[in-house]
Length: 198
Image (cartoon, rainbow, N blue to C red; front, side, top):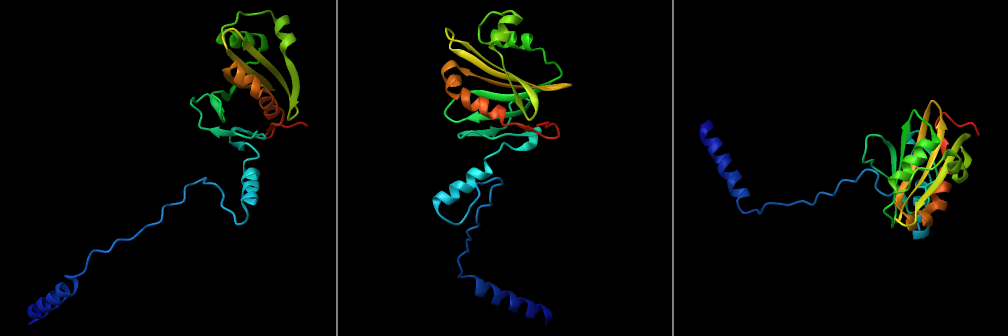
């Protein structure tokens, strides 16, 4: 008797389901982390909100700074780099590393060699250095251009003794000259986490 009842229920189930087509469903895509902020309002309002979110570089590297228009932080290609930046429309490689040495002449001559220029004396190097403050810390800033070779480096050494931070932008002479003002403004706007004295 129990077997007959089970068989009858099974037949009824198969009969009821036999003529239906399989159902398909649309599953919404997952929201991507760090996707652009969506806001209600006009396009101008939305752009203003986006600009506010991008106004400062994130503090993951131990500092914040105002990002010029067209800049973005990108994943570093080297474990030595504390931060790397992409500058829209250029091939400039701009990054930050931290070392325990802050010898300016040696570093400047090393950078000169990287763009095909010979070493020069500390006195000549001193003539090309620009000193300013970032977050209350001394910065030595220099622009190195090999006009003949077409390559250049803009670099800054920030004194956070016992560590020294090296911001280095490498690229073509033309691109670096066109973005030198933004690079300088970026450096001057830096505020260091737990290190500011301004």
